[in-house]
Image (cartoon, rainbow, N blue to C red):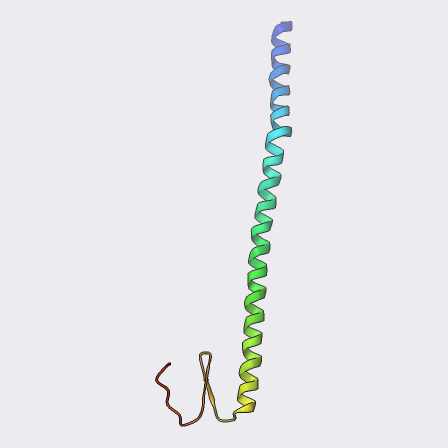
Length: 86
């Protein structure tokens, strides 16, 4: 009976070592990777918001500078003037 008990203890200690040395660091790295991906998404959303705000400021300034002009996409078109898209 004694050899059976020591074999059981050896198996239990092996799983403990596996958990501490391999599984826990792997889980920690996975969590860090997930948070890094999330922070990249947040940064990208912030950049898009900044670009939209800058565009709104520029179009507002252009409309104040050239009253009656239209903003089509990123181009300011003077009233009554046709462009060929170039």
